[in-house]
Amino acid sequence: MAAERGLVVEDAGTGFCGAVVGMERSYAADLVRLEDRHGRTRVFPLYPAAFLIDGRTVTLVAPRSAGPRAPVRTASGSRTAPQRRARTARAGRIFVEGVHDATLVERVWGDDLRSEGVVVISLDGLDNLADALAEFVPAPHRRAGVLVDHLVAGTKEAQLTAEVGPDVLVRGHPYVDVWQAVKPASVGIAEWPVIPMGTDWKTGICDELGWGSPRDGWRRVLDAVDDFRDLEVPLLRSVEELIDFVTADPEST
Image (cartoon, rainbow, N blue to C red; front, side, top):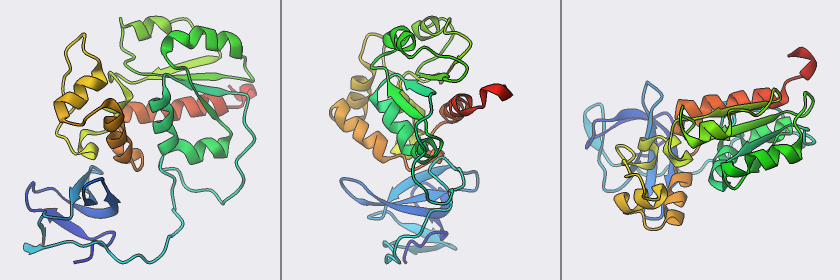
């Protein structure tokens, strides 16, 4: 049976039931993404997985392409605006810790950022934040937003962002690395492994999951993210607040 969007099926192996929301391709197999009634999504290989429809076992196949359709919403969930040229860059900026953070933000919020004229800058490490802000010189008309990994009380990250000034908004998430802000189900695992202190987190994750090198692991993580539904709420909330902050009219706040 063709895996048409909206078709409701149950994975016979796990019991996960949901509607087809898309087809994907990994390095090893064709995949189908299902979304249940709670908004949770999981991906399953088309082969050799078996699916149930009204109790009947079926094999799903990729549907024939009917040609691309214009998306109704962006990957962040925002309603798609009429097509137009990207807005000239605003004075405000959003700073993130590293390239992976910047790439993931672009994957989900890229359309929104271009529409609003917001530029995202990688710090190449939070230790560089003070120098970056000193060079940027935040002001009411040129605000800075900062997205921080592992922003938990008592951590180095919390100390480095404790005093940033009134025109800088710091938001973050509790996860050790931005990889962990991607839902485990989206990358096809039950949960993110716990890596002992003293071990490089990305290397430890790849060793535990058999993902090869951190470069290979990052490719898996990024390929698993289609839109906001693949990300954990703390990251979603933080990025949305930062975009609102740097795009707000200074005279209205």
